[in-house]
Length: 247
Image (cartoon, rainbow, N blue to C red; front, side, top):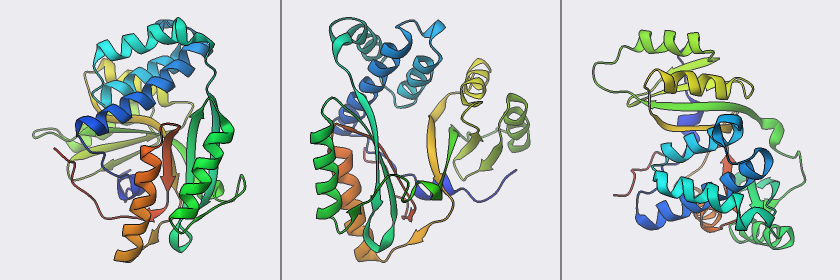
């Protein structure tokens, strides 16, 4: 089951600065609000909320923050409606880009997303213009620690219901169907594994190489999307060099 990882190729390392953490926690807080509104504030009876809490823990979001977000969503924020809207378009050199947002003002968000595409040499397209180039999968990444057995880890993932398994230099990447994601994640959690990340993601079927100038421009686009509070996730098929996390 081991092979080339498209996810590792296109997944950007997130900075570990306080400012970067704050942005990530704000975005996850919105996901918690949506999950609570859909299924209530009790994780035991709300599978979507359990998935978001797992994602929050993988992002090192403190438990106090998680519980505060659940309480807010159950209380005073219960009447704020976040709408999920996905935008598709092209970055420099025709790179396919999918932007997933949660917004309480879709006119503002659409304007902001279009502005970022235009400012960075791209263009916003119509729904479906690039999504066919991606597969939606569950992706669980576990740290590959010294002494762990690769074959044993692979068999564990398969037994839990995984579709695919990749061994990277410093991690194991487990891919699932969207339907099996929660089941596999919870089974691995029960066996004591902690995750670098655990989320539903869009995996490109192929990647696009960029030169140094194009990489700089495209990275600027990604940074602008990261800085926008309404943008939850950005997926693309650019083959970017790995970057080190900021300390």
